[in-house]
Image 1 (cartoon, protein in one colour):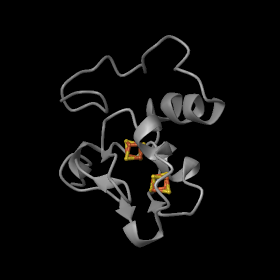
Image 2 (cartoon, protein in one colour):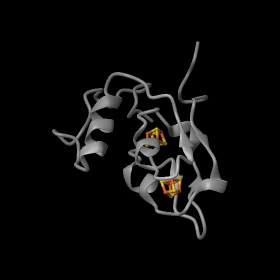
Image 3 (cartoon, protein in one colour):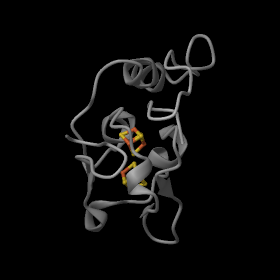
Image 4 (cartoon, rainbow, N blue to C red):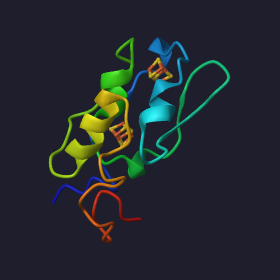
Length: 101
Ligand code: SF4
Ligand code: SF4
């Protein structure tokens, strides 16, 4: 079975990055880290495929197939440039959920 915590659809094309830092700002799981010349894909297995980074990247350096469920709370919040309405998604942070560790 597909496990987004050990494998996911996130693809990063670092050669396209213009270091705008948006991905590090919008990612709720710290997948990207600021680098000197380009963002660094630091924690790929933490990606839960919300798609916020790809939507906010101005040069299409990030590709990801967005998931469903509570990820949409995060993605819509990122699009609106706000925190999620209630400050958290609805998964409850259970182990194995998008916010579980
Ligand atoms: S898809 Fe979401 S969780 Fe994954 S790297 Fe992008 S912003 Fe972070
Ligand atoms: S949003 Fe795109 S261009 Fe900006 S730092 Fe991230 S990967 Fe680079």
